[in-house]
Image (cartoon, rainbow, N blue to C red; front, side):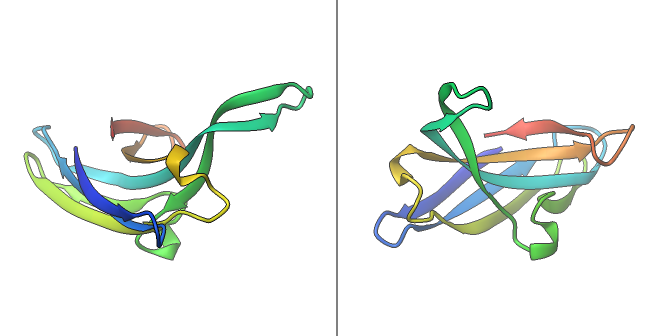
Length: 122
């Protein structure tokens, strides 16, 4: 997986471009390309009242609203490369300097479509 793109600090808008190569000898189907925004250094209270300092999931991106929580459905032929991308924005309530955009490829498991293994991540 190769990533490129841009981010404008003033408008808090950006674009991430993704190139995914299937190195397997078989096509990938029932596969999803997912984009998530995380923020590090966020403090919050755990259920037991303890202060926790860590990484927080902030937002999930997809090209279509019906694919929002499972990512963009993709099929990649054996040895083929797929180019995709998504526009994104960082809300004013997020500390943009502490945010990272995570891109990953998931595949439905043989057991259930609700269990998904991560195949690639950047």
